[in-house]
Image 1: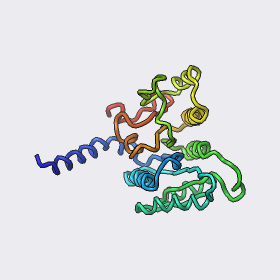
Image 2 (image 1 turned 180 degrees about the vertical axis):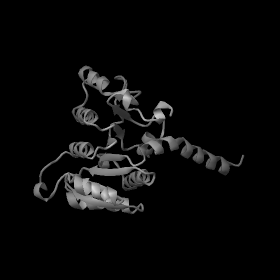
Image 3 (image 1 turned 30 degrees about the vertical axis):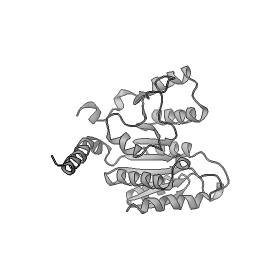
Image 4 (image 1 turned 60 degrees about the vertical axis):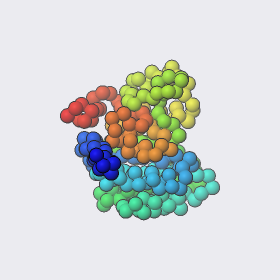
Length: 242
């Protein structure tokens, strides 16, 4: 078989494999905490924005919450990230603070909301974007809350060879008692547990430095990170073979 045709067939098979996921994720809200910017080059950041736009193109409703690197203007950075998304052919808009009415309105009007935790009244304060993402995910009844960081997920053992693909809330709570997780990572786990207990269907911990990590996580069997679910009752139809 011609090599070019083989490549086309391979790409087609990937799309076919993704169909059950696309069906189950259609019109689902996903909050993405973009906490890995400091480890990405400009090219890698733009590639990540393209992946977020692809999620929207297949029917998902992404919301981006971001941190601001030290020394940068928060609101200018908000506009910059929105512009990067728009360069991929969608509408995006910067929003200051947790304004769920505006966020919902923008989603309904085909925009990707890009949120900086601060507004004009608390511009100089530090507000943890991970906590802001959690708050928005809960208030918007998001299906997914994604933490993009430098952490690939929860390792199964101290050798750090394999990570849990999927883990339930009781299992995570048990692990937190048995392991001494780094403070920053333990905070992310804590936010994820709270989200899972408060109605967010899935929490994903992903290494944002991995190329196409969002697409691998959402549209493949084993994904690229660790998923938190409250119980096995939270499985999608395609995970149940339906």
